[in-house]
Image (cartoon, rainbow, N blue to C red; front, side, top):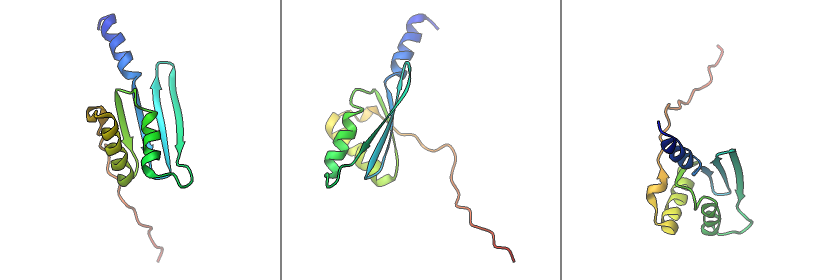
Length: 110
């Protein structure tokens, strides 16, 4: 790998963010060359959902890749608002879980 390829890889890696969002809070983890940073965006009392989503989106506007996680209703709302605001659906990365989660019931002693 050449130095130029390594430099391009590092720049790309430094422009990623992971967003976990529900209807009351967004937790944003950004990868920087010097490490990770975490930001929490809390929904204000009586704040419209659209305004809350816009504030969260504002935190990741300059990122080349945005991975969104959280409950489906909140994740979908954030992704739609992101695309409406940025017109860049290509920046959203869809990540499927690598393992399935099974509901395990309690075993009753008899």
